[in-house]
Length: 345
Image (cartoon, rainbow, N blue to C red; front, top):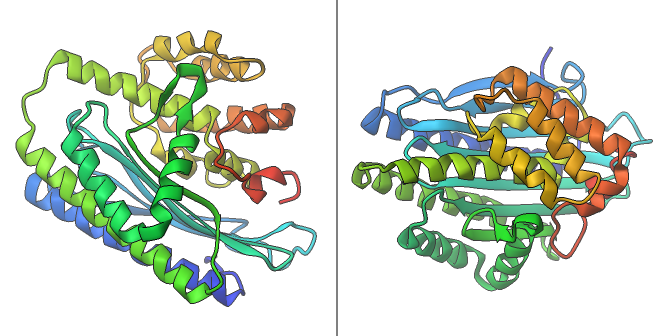
């Protein structure tokens, strides 16, 4: 059994792009482990969609617990070339989250994907966001400048959409401090779009590695408050991802063969009581979802592999029972087609 790629040349090119970004990131983070940590490189884990007939992917997972709370660099390609009844033709993506162990080192999330639909249309989705548990203005400024330099005239739109997408209405705050998001993006030149996707990913990876290398070297003295801030942020991250994030939801609704990988962005521990306290801030049926999520987590707040699987099943079952709740999730100015038509994909 092995992974088969989509027949579309565009999807194959996109797969090459996201794989190159995956390897670039894994190599750079593993180099940090060699220099500053336990010299334990990221380790690859593979998975197959329908035994590889409809694609699959791989993720590089952090193994250096002295540097990383969790870290996962996921690449996937799901396609339905042999199933004309499906609205989705192919989806090719890199999605990565790094949660450093040191609470003074910011987390970072990046997603780059190409979606092709049965009608022949295709679009890119690009996002990057810096997520500190303890704010550092220099980190934010450096990250913003790097994104602005690579995005150029797209920066203003991406920053506005990012601020909208990563806002959490129930808590009246954002997840993270620096946000960039382009949904349904395409120009008139396919090759230029591919080059932009690659350059965007490389810029995000390179500046983030620089940020965390500097932070690990210079930020060593921790307070109890800073440690608690990290636990609170990790709880916020889980809350946002599992109640608002459309990418996570669409991945879970499309299939159940990579639940552990999709949940790979979750930190190792959260504050269960804090999570449950936010239930009252949400309207139905999302308040019920938070209660279910909290019930799947033990009192110690540990997010184990078994807990990730339970959380994935709960989210999937929730939106199948309450499909209208999809409209309550985060969005920019456009609704991702794969989510809007999740029953058809």
